[in-house]
Image 1: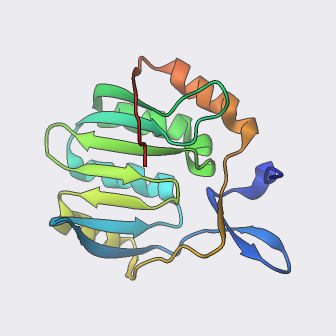
Image 2: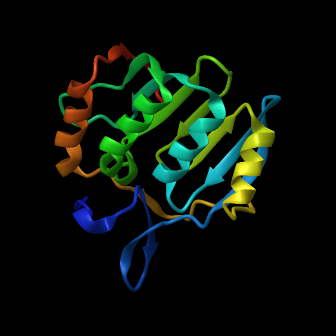
Length: 188
């Protein structure tokens, strides 16, 4: 497949018969879900990086950050890269520094586990954010930011933007911090 242009600007694309692949930008919606008895919020933010940074404030000040590489480029393997005991400021700094890569390339998931207040935030390859824990406060945050209730739908066909030119940014992220790497057999 021909790589998408660098200016594509989204992790996910939908096929348009006239214009070809078009970026998908969500419209600030959310839906309450229960998966195997566990409640969560599915959030489809128009600006996922900004939303993730804002939502982290709900979860305290001590976090484990996990970079889950689900579509590794040549020379890499499916793996979890973990950092323990990061402050809110440190996690926000990592997200901001690498935001262009994290928000524009779909080869990964980001998991952020709260260590001092419970809860988890997952930013996936579709630019969806899953919130576990503190759901009432999270709903208040969403409503205060103008999010509307509604479950997003992934169009068919769709494409995950995995830009080979972004591999150098992935490498920079993995070298910049003291990650603990663990291979995984089934990253999905």
